[in-house]
Length: 271
Picture 1 (cartoon, rainbow, N blue to C red):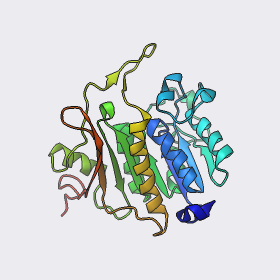
Picture 2 (cartoon, one colour):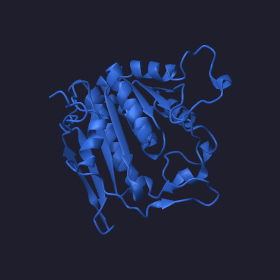
Picture 3 (tube, helix red, strand yellow):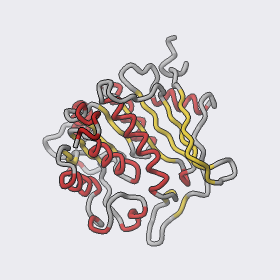
Picture 4 (tube, rainbow, N blue to C red):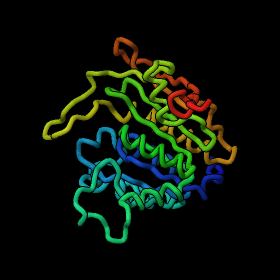
């Protein structure tokens, strides 16, 4: 099988932690397994709902099951060269009841830190600015390459950013560059929000057929970073995707790459 994809042989000993197994992280996880990654840890506390079927890779048979368990079981059944497992821990929520903290843990983030330290690359598809900030910080602290990807409202565009071991800039630097309009931000469709019938929280509109553009760029980047020179990861720090023009009409997917230098008010303050 690997003779059809020679880069796969260089991935069999690599570990990837995927944080966020929604519409983007789920497809990325399956593609990473299909590409030959040796071990994938999946971190997400959400469950598969019927409404997710329009943009989630697995269908009715996994409704009501945890997203990480559903993905891990599917990978184990179909891509046996990859060890897929559910990572312990939870991000994006506070623990307010001490009884809910396992007694053997001194810190509820301990299992997350352990996963970060053991990963060769961390993929952040959480679509949460707070999680992006925290994960990028700890990946920098633990010296783990960090790859982040998300779509904008209405899937008018998207972002794949990476901060590697030799990166001088960080996630905060990118935010500062965006705030000062030194680097173009991805296009947004403000009308692309909906509260589904029977739901109690808003979500963005958009299909898996567009979201997979971002998933695939995440996978190409990760494979390049892990492949020991057998696959080109590209030379950019930030990839910005545009799927709709200024008038909201569909356009051919357009990726543009940018460097992200250290910002004077953050990592570049001492320069």
